[in-house]
Image (cartoon, rainbow, N blue to C red):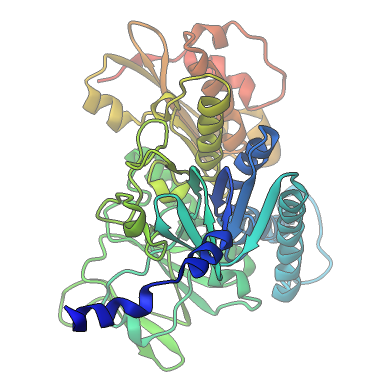
Length: 482
């Protein structure tokens, strides 16, 4: 017993030590960990409600969207679109005086400037919040109500986790022996890869693939499944593939047994299990195979917070974890993977806490965009999901080539597609792949949230000449889904 007591003696404190330790705990009404898309507005609302709030960020304020996602990538997409349009200038009767060249250092500088503006704005907003304290450092739970950041211990009865996600690095033969890029490290690229090989044929991979092809790189996209963007219907995926291949992007589907190895100063990627395998040789490799939550170093076990097998924090319909004092919002909860779903998480939590509402994650309608050019706007169910649900439905499609705005702009690729419940006449889902598709889709989405029949749209008078004016025409072509 004496030996055992001597072991634990160093952890015991005198009465005065305990008083000092208690005094070092900073107490708040709420703690927000992470400053992605839902953290800052929630912190703002908390302070407006009189909550003394601690805000913790270990790296860049603004999260993925501001620093390595939406804002910088769409800025790059815009630069790439200009290069593409210049190459097509002769189609519009415009003569370009000299050969096109892309200055990647200036492209990156523009991207950096716009991203910095957003990050600076969010940082200024957070620091200006009354009744809030901003901490720069890494947060780790020490109990369900205490979080340590740097050398300080913070305590609160409400803690909100908004730590986001990062690129998934797959277990792949040879991956530890080569250099590779992710969506984050691509933000530092200020040169033109000679041949960019991309593993992953979904949102991140296709957006980077098209932009770098337009900048002038040779691009190969490798996808292990039989189609690009596996969650989409085959007709949309096939059309996207044709659009990208028309621009010179090489697509390799059904790539099994993917393995990588160094080849000179570049990389070689094996595509199948044959001996010898099909192989793609490139100068640079981009991994775009998915995301993983930033939850592995938060000390969640000390807080008793449950996660699933992939590390996503498990939450209920109101985004509460299994611990009643802790919520998880944004990408780390696995209930959405977009900026708009993260912001909607904030809206749900704030409305339930302060506005007497009973909002739920399941109330929202799936909506997202693929920001290649032309973009895809998606809302609601895919055709495959409608068929799986066994719904009696109507379907209609309409080609962009028959839309005046598309012809005028010389951008006629893609089509519109809508699915409607045959009995209630409510819109089940819509996909718009084509010029303005990421904006036009909201004409459907708003009606879907209103729970109104599609006939509300058919009776509306739309502005000419636009893409949206053809929505009534599309709906006029509805036929039973066979």
